[in-house]
Length: 111
Image (cartoon, rainbow, N blue to C red; front, side, top):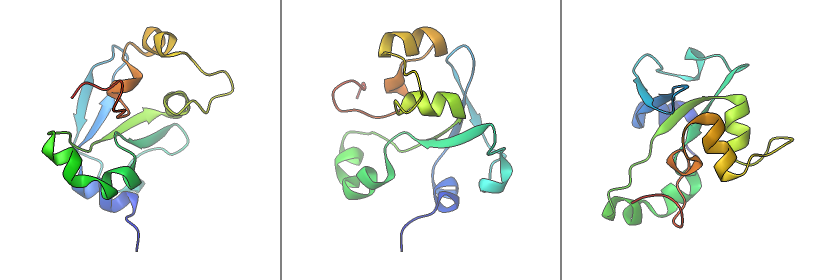
């Protein structure tokens, strides 16, 4: 049986991405019923399937899984799924944070 988002919510810390690019840890979300799905998505820092397959690789390097509560438009940009996608530089200019702080990438993320 594959993991559900509710199981991930219980297991990993959740952060909100503020408009200035900083993070605020969220404690009140205990299930998927605790946030507005019309405006926000929960996003895995490391894609669930990659993390589960390679958990020891991440742990050896001190890279921890976490979830981010982000506006849907930002989530689409993180994954380059928006109608008009932003370059990495434009993403950082618009959201005040590097895409690679929100999604793990061996090439671009700091670790």
